[in-house]
Length: 317
Image (cartoon, rainbow, N blue to C red; front, side, top):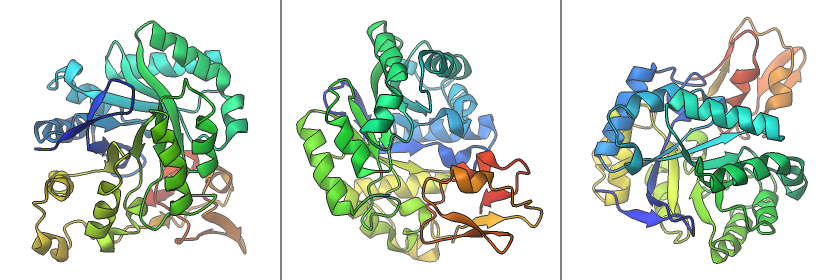
């Protein structure tokens, strides 16, 4: 059984493994809400009481389905949005509550905050979420970030209680420094009592060949209260849980249960409009000689870019 940890000073107790829901949704696997709900319920039965989602992921229906079987008070839901004003924050919160059929969200994050300037630009939304926290609609507020500068900026805001940063042994996806610099910033955040749950411990799938080493790395970080991992099948759930319980099967690992090579693929009908290039915060996409090109060393397989493709020609496969 997975053990739990206190998420900083939030009062929330979360499993060390967080169920990342991005990969089951429309941006990747495209599982139905019923299929996704069954996976989330299975994860809960195995001890995963923490799920990470976002407005962008379109997996609220999957979580709603899971909540038909999971006692709401025993499940921690974290979501994110790009809200920047009171109105956009209100719309995002109402959408989350309605589509997940819940009276409250345990954690609401401002999505992909880059620096103090970004947080200031979204502060009106943060203020709204803080007010809704006081009213009982939100349990804790915070930010997700791919940047060390985002973590460092959060240290200036006591009201930011939870951080969701990129943490993996190679530092893949960190846009402004090294993993050592990220961990130094997170150490300071931990001292302030902030809850920290990492993302992309496998570098968006790029580090799957060192699967065990990646898990060992993040599990050895004492102030990383939970680790969000995208999962699409019962086999993946079981394998990830086994890494935390010490019961992993090296034979299964070597057979390639989780070692399928994934990459960002561009369909032939791409019109090279450039929308995805502008949307990619990792600068992994560019237009070269009239063709869309993927820099696989920069791509973390988040799939966010596919949301901006008007022709639906971008997929993680």
